[in-house]
Image (tube, one colour):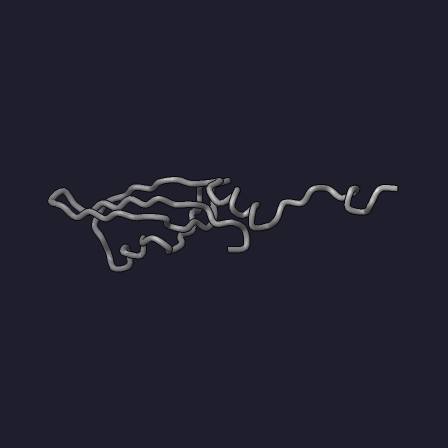
Length: 87
């Protein structure tokens, strides 16, 4: 007679699923122009919402950012990772 545990599908712990999906959707954004009040919110740890990118729409966390102000103007680059559902 099989034990009840033998008939259950293998379950992956939530922490392991989260870890494996953590890097599922990543990307880089670069933009420039004249900095305005509030543009410095592109800092690591902050979140942004992308819209107008179809299946890539959603909430992203800024993993890193760099800001450059030179004679040719202002430039910013950010590395982002899509937040998992519920975050």
